[in-house]
Amino acid sequence: MTDEVPNRPRADPTFEHRRHGDRKHDSGREDREEWVWVLDYLPYGRETDNRPVYQKKPLIHALGDNKLILMELIPVEDKIPPVHIKTHIGNRDEEYVERVKSRIPYDDLSHGAVLELPLVLEDYVKENEDRFIQFFSKAEPLSMRQNSLELLPGVGKKLMLDVLEESKKGPYEGFEDLKARVPALHNPEKLIVQRIIEEMKGGQKYYVFAAPPSRSMLNPEEGGSGSGSGNNGGRQGHRGSGGGGYGRRRE
Image (cartoon, rainbow, N blue to C red; front, side):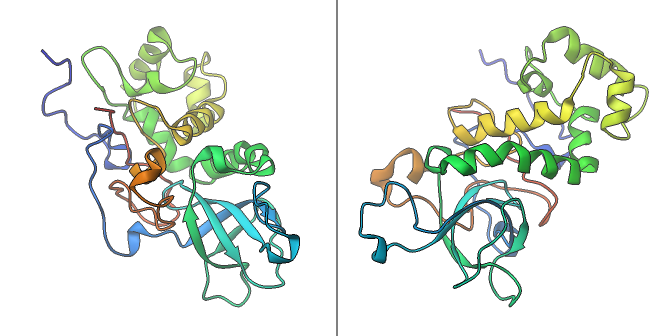
């Protein structure tokens, strides 16, 4: 008999916990990435590209602002984007990105991008504090035995119960309010960043913040490395609000 909670109410559609494999495809503008955070600029493309230097083209490794997907981009000619900048994809003369080349898995990130990713995500989480704090205020059960808060690294039963009990007194107003009311939770922002990176690496039972790897990335023989538009899983929200709505469970 399954331990999943039947007909579980959705406290907040921003963090809708779906099971990995229960894929729902979106369409339209909200499913596309329009803004990205630059993680690394590769003037000669990937390090694994063995072609002669004159044949290599610059690339950008970036984080999508809409769905938190990792992307490989074609830069505008003769423009070098600063690392850590948030920029628009195409159609703006002052921007750095011409177009999306593909979605890429975590393991394909350049060394520089891997180092920059936690720093960018920290800024991303703080920029979207009002949204991410709802994860703590409206934490949902994943099953009869587990709450979504326990997906965060280092959060056990006792700390989870402390957060839930305190939230009954009223929603958390921000990270500082959360830390003041639950002193044992020292740095919730970093816990979210760590969880996001774990989800980006794949192999998770649940995906809460980031899009799960596409089938084409998990099984290359199914074709390609995925789409830069991120058509993998339903997200509810809008551009720039953060990449949630992916809580899926692996079948």
